[in-house]
Amino acid sequence: MKTPITVLGLGAMGTALARAFLAAGHPTTVWNRTPGRSPELDDLGAGRAKTVADAIAVSPLVVVCLLDDASVRTTLEPAATELSGRTLVNLTNGTPLQARRAAEWAAQQGAEYLDGGIMAVPSMIGGPAAFVLYSGSPVAFERYQTDLAALARPQYVGSDAGLAALHDLALLSAMYGMFGGAEHALALISTEKISPTAFTGELLVPWLTAMMASLPGIANDLEYGAAPGAAGSNLAMQAAGFVNLIDASEEHGVDPLLLTPIRDLLDRAVAAGHGDEDLGAMVRLLLKTAG
Ligand code: FVH
Image (cartoon, rainbow, N blue to C red; front, side, top):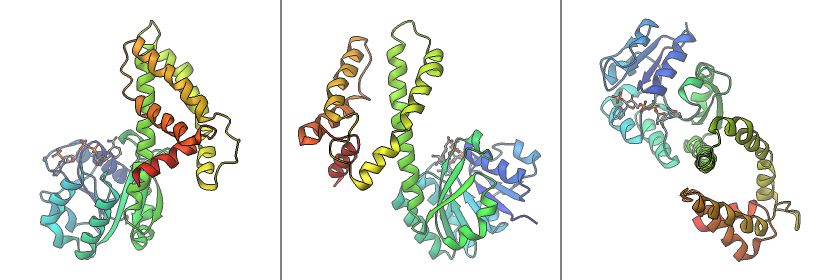
């Protein structure tokens, strides 16, 4: 008998999670604020609970995937007593602080708590490229990691419940930065008779893929320090060239708002004497800004 699992929240992601548990043979009970959402789950064998408390009562493992932290709290708090002795896995996007508070609250209800960051879009759930970061109770992860693997490759990042969210938000920051750059690139080429599809397939994707290879070098510089004079693409050179990105955008009627913060940081790095260093110096500058 596979572990019975409850899924709270049937948005695009919650529905994909419930589908994956059903496909793996888990008795799956679902609940959603708006009743009747994702009716296809009924045909796949899901049980539908009328209340959150009823949904929690039938499974030792409760997975919650709602819009945000506030919706998780308002959903769980009225059914808090049902959580005692169960494991709560919160796959809702949130901050490390929210995750730590949720872990504390769950412990007060007598529940084990795992926080998770889903590194996938709904269509990837159950597929080979998806992974989910988990942090919190090591006991809960040990007990349920095989069941959770039905969703995506589970990766445990530590017993501090906030660590999954920290990793998740760092990865999402990198993704949004990359997409922001791609959005600007597509706006720029759209000002001429260039096919966005051809540009993306033939040039943009190969270019970004090739550039990914330099990321470990930046991380290495950050962790161990860069050898003096080792920068192959020094920041002074990059700052001088970056002006052209802004000027050409203006000339072509494209708003450079996604690029100007990077220009400002490059200029600041050069002004602070880091012109002969590589991109690792920019990371250190960001840390100083935050501190
Ligand atoms: N979809 C994605 O690409 C990303 C991938 C990475 C992880 N995220 C996070 O997953 C959480 C859920 O995202 P989602 O895609 O399922 O979101 P929606 O389709 O918009 O569904 C939202 C569900 O939340 C319910 N809900 C909203 N507010 C409340 C509330 N106050 N009380 C109870 N439930 C609430 C909503 O219910 P309903 O509107 O149908 O009644 C949906 O079930 C999210 O944290 C992503 O960041 C997804």
